[in-house]
Amino acid sequence: MVKMKKFDLATVEPEVGEPAADRLIAGTPRFRTWNVEEADGGLYAGVWESTPGKWRIVYDEWEYFHILSGYSVVTEDGGEAVHLRAGDSMILRPGFKGTWEVVETTRKDYVIRL
Image (cartoon, rainbow, N blue to C red):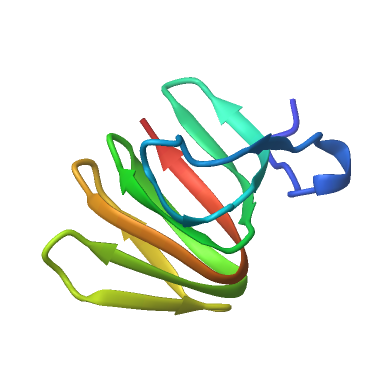
């Protein structure tokens, strides 16, 4: 059994989505998610992309991500805005509540642990 996997988006059909209507703050953001890996124990890895807009986020999961392109602003409730551009990485822990604003279409790769 092969124990490695290349992120090859050409082999994955992206899921299309948008924020829930009750979380939308501004714009009409649209998501594309290429879930490249799904492993036992609730581990996911792939690539996510969103067009501009702003919405509330609430995390029950742990997520590491790395911005590949674009410009976004993530703000924790009661905290300062964190501006994210290509090359930036972040971890969001369970219990995080705040907003995600995509200023310029943003693409990130991610690893999520439920």
